[in-house]
Every structure is written in C-alpha cells, then in structure tokens.
View (tube, rainbow, N blue to C red):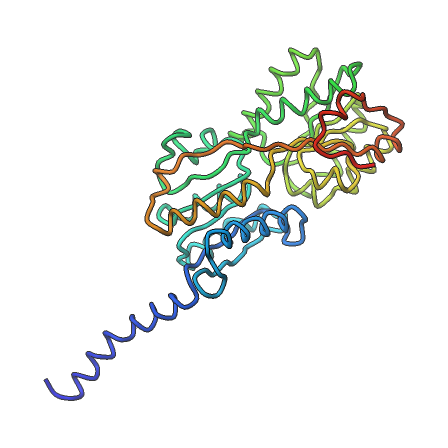
Amino acid sequence: MNRRAFVIGLGAVLAPLAVRAQQATKGSLVVFFTLDSRASDRVSSALDALKQGFRDLGYVEGRNLTLKGRFGEARREVLVGLAREIAGMEPRAIVTFGTPATDAAKAATSTVPIVFFSVGDPIGSGFAASLARPGGNLTGFSFVGPEVAAKDLEFLKDAFPAIKSVAVLGAGKPDHPLARAVWGKLVESARALDIMLQRVQVPTDEQLDAALARLAAQRPDALLVLNDPIFLTNRQRIFAVVARLRLPAMYQSSELAHDGGLMAYVPSIAEQARRAAGYVDRILKGTKPADLPVEQPTKFDLVINLKTAKALGLTIPPALLLRADQVIE
C-alpha cells in the first residue's frame, strides 16, 4: 500500500471516530417536544422537573447529556414540521409533553424511542397496545384524561350541589380518540350526577371567540375547561367570560387556578416529567420502550382559589377546602 492510500484509509477510519468522540463529549441527545408555549409556566415546571430527574441520575448537560427543546407555541399546524425536524436530528430519545406532540412524534418516527407524559388516553390514541406491554417505540406516563375529567365534574357538583348544566370547553377535533373517550366518560358521569352537558368545541385558535360567544349564549350553571395549551394562551379571554357570567369553573391546569381560575384538579405534571427522566435513562442503557410499562399518575393536585371565589360571589364548602392540596387566599 502506498503512503497516499494509507493516509486516505486512515482518514476514513478516524473520521467516524472523531464524530463519536464529539458526541460522547456532548452526551446523548434528548429532545423535549410539546405543543405548549416555551414561556408557559407549566412547561417551565415540567422542564425543571425533567432536568432535575436527569441530575438525580448523574447526568450533566453538556457532558453526558444534550437536552434540546421544540415548542409548538399552541399552534397545532406546526407540529408535523417540528416532529420531522426532531426525527432528522437523530436523537437517542424524544420526550413528549401532551397528546398532540406525541401524535406528531409517532407519525414522524417508528425507530427513535419516545417517552411521553401528560397523555390522556395512550391506548385509545394508539400510542400503546396495552399499559403493561406498550409495544413499538413509545412508552411513558398517562394523564388518565377520561377519569380526570369525570373527577373534575364530581368536584364541581360537590362544590355547587345546585348546578344542573355544565358547559365543557374542549379543543381540537371532537372525533380524536382522546376527545371521544373523555366525552364518553363525562356523559357517563353527568348521568350519575344528574347534570346536563353542553359541549363547546374549539378546533382552532381562530374559533375561540365564536366558541366563547356560544358559551355565553347557552348560560350554563358551571364550566369545565379541558386540558389544552390554547386555553392557557387565551386564559384572560376565558376568565373575562367566566367573570361576566359569574360561572363556577373547573380547569385542568393548576397554572390557570393560580392565575385566576376558580378550581383545578390534575395529575402532577412535574412528577410525571421527573419520572420520564428515569425512563429515558433506562432506554439509554439499553432497555426497549416496548418493555417499559405505561404508568398511571401517582400524585394529583386539587387547587382552589378563594380570591376568585370571593370575586365571583361564590362560597366553597369547608369540607371541599379540607380536601384541597392548595388553597389560594
């Protein structure tokens, strides 16, 4: 072999080694992906918990872990493009927050491991074959959306026993598997509680004002706002209608209760994000997502805002206040 051929051959061997050495220095690439806004308090809380989970497991960003984020800013139409971009980055794992981002990530890759959390119905949405054996490249932590929605309705009835009609503000397509599952469970719960439901669906951000106008025209006794970034982004518009109608309202975001909503009952997102880091760690060490069971929430938070109750002229029963995890006075 002549010297020139030897140098070329040596370069071909060393080049991939140099790339791997650079990757080893920066660590495994993990991408956090959500429909939510980067500036959302719940995204900040989730990211802080995810990072803390990695730190607790011995990961140091920039050394043995590179964590990047992609955010939909509450615009569903950008998720497909973001998911394809993420797949093209060839990460070792994708952590998805919420059903819309998980939908998009699943469509973009069947090989990159995906760890989801705050997903309402993993089986119905097609993310897992079963909780015990999810199969495929996805696993994670369920929001148990249908069950949480039913419990939200129960808390509204406990707080205000006289209510007979509840408007349900939901987002996205009503025929999505999660939306169908949540609505079915709500209908079942409403029947048992002697409540009439009024469905107010918001397919896109541009249709929110029309939906709120329908809500005002229906004049329900109470309101249940389901979990979606569109309602976080437009919370003040929702609060304005609630204040004008003096409606008791239950939200599926503790952030909304802190910002002026009356009540919220949800699984702890921070807890799920922290536990997601543990699943990513196991995947990086060789475990397949298909072998990691989808886990249910272990911690739920009931938040009641007494300042909002006073402003709306509402009285929360003392028994319910005793059950609250947090009371804002």
